[in-house]
Length: 158
Image 1 (tube, one colour):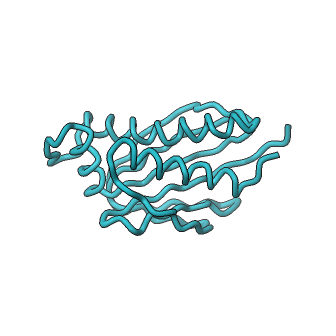
Image 2 (tube, rainbow, N blue to C red):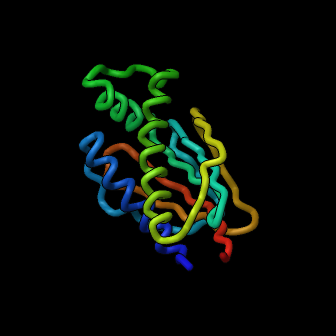
């Protein structure tokens, strides 16, 4: 059975690789912590629900300024003033690559899961509380703009 630390390492590794390959931003290894109360950065939160051997949620929280930088790089240098529908689609596509590659890597190790739903939340001052456990939080603090990945997963025995 795969360990929780292996899952976290897989998502962290894929975030680093996708950022470097797709938008040419170097992320250092994320700082991992556990907490039941999560405060999101002002900006965009991509929420993906998973089911299967591993079920739960992955949330990727990107600050507004980093979201604009991502869109600038994905749109070939066109400045982004507001995070509109098209910008949100670009951000989601990047997050989908991170999550999809992570799921594929875990599948190669015998862990299957399906993306069951996804959504994008934009705004300020979001607090999220987990009542039954602690969430794994990966924070990339080396960026001038903030990004975090929140992992809330249940692992079922085969």
